[in-house]
Structures are given as structure tokens and as C-alpha cells.
Length: 312
Image 1 (cartoon, rainbow, N blue to C red):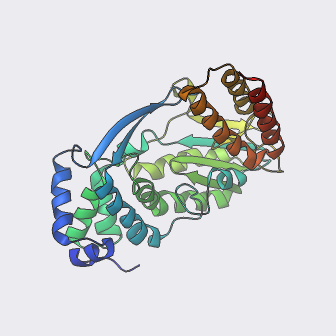
Image 2: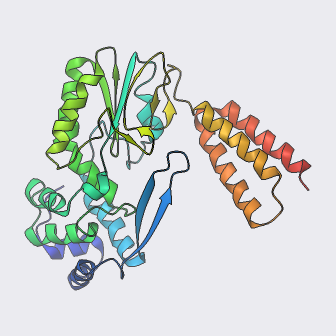
Image 3: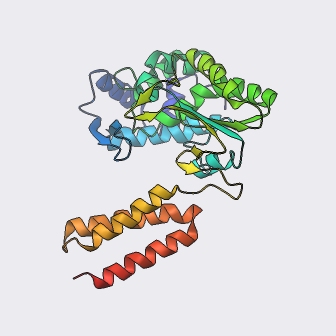
């Protein structure tokens, strides 16, 4: 894609007026009130709290157009699997099946620590966009000087920032040592017969050029180690899926057991909103299991139906 040099060209691609883009950018400079809602979620398993900024309809529409008309045409690296059509946690995990050693690591506070000036330099200096174009795109896709988690553009911008600065360098090193490497947003995975752990320092150095750091071996967050070196004799997890077997990724047994326990709890709930909501959640979790463990998904569905018939 050729660089976008004029604001008029940008507005045309986004289906709005130059004046309105400038107005929204000025409003965003003053805070999130007009264009974002805010909420937090806690992961039940890890206890980690994530803070989300959900853009309101007008800004979300513009951000989706930025993603489709500006970010997506720029492509992504071969090692990236997050936020890319046709790729998923499953395709990411599938690159690391049945290996002697698997290493996973992630970036500390990836979205909040991706600063607005790094995003601006991406658009202006690396992609060659016009000065005001780069400024507007940065202001329309960042909030309080960081990438807002929950915005349609954040993962795409993250992928672009890491493509040349990190992915290319790490992939080259992985080829040299005979390892496989993938990235799902800010989660890196390495595996192979050679020592994939040698890629840890290479990745950390590359991330530092984007003012980002990784969790180190001794660091735990919410009780869970953020850097894991997993030999074949232990359970190897990549993006939440077990990859020990060469036949394909699998949902971990403790997750499947958790769904069975949730079905048992659901069966004793009285009729009402809470019961209906719990059932919808269970159906969604069974669908997730079906991708990798279809037999187990069928057994869980039959168990749900059997307990449902017994319920008052």
C-alpha cells in the first residue's frame, strides 16, 4: 500500500470528512468521556485483571475502517497469529506439536506500555505517512498516550509495530538454531530440537527497541509464571492448548473437568436468568472444546442434556 500523504485521502478512505476527523481527535485529546466506555474483567483462573476501553459507536466505526483500509492491507509477519483472519490460538499452537522443548513468554503490559509516540513514529517515519495523517491516526487509535485494550485497531497496530522490529529478527534467529517461533499478540512461543530458550534474550533485546520488556523467569504474576520452559516430560501449553502430542492441540484436562463441574452446578440452579446464563456459558465452552476434542465435547453435551432432563 502506498503511503497516505494527505488528510483528504485519509478521510476518503475512512468514509468521513476531514473536519469530523479533526473534531474527534481534539475531543479524544481531552479524555475518554465522549468516545469510550470503561470496564474491567478478572480472569477466574489466573486472577489477572484486564482493563478495557470500548469505543462508542462513531469512533468504533472509524476504527474499524482504519483497520480495514489502513492496517490490514499492510499485512502481518508469518509468525503472527493474533488478530489475523484465518489464524487463531489453534493455528498458533499447531506450530509447536510434539517438540522436545517449548518456551513461552509474554510482554509486560503490552497495550498500556505501547506509547503514543511509538505509534506516531510507525505511521510517520516507518510507513511514510504525511505528518498530519500520522498525527490523526495516532490520536484516533490511542488513549491517554497508550493503546486502548478493546479498540478494533489495537491488535493490528501491535502486529505492525512488532513485525519488522521483532518478528523478523526473532524468526531469523529461530532458523539459525532450528527452532519454530510464533507470536499471538504479545505471547511468544518457541520450540524445537535445538535450544529454543536461546531465543529469550534475542526477543527481549528486540522488544526493547519498542520500549517494551518481557516477564523474566523468576517473575510470577497473579501466581502464574510468565516465562515457561517446558520439556516433553511436562505438560506443554501454547495459547492455552496442550501441544505434547503430534496429533494436534488439545484443550487441557483441567479445563474439560471444569466444564463438567459447571454442568453439575448448573443442574441444581433454580429456573431463571442465572440458570439460563450459566447454560449459555457452558454451551460456549463446549463449542471451544469441540475444535480439538470432539469426542469429549459430545460426552459433555450428552451429560448436560441428561442432567437437564432430571432438573426440576
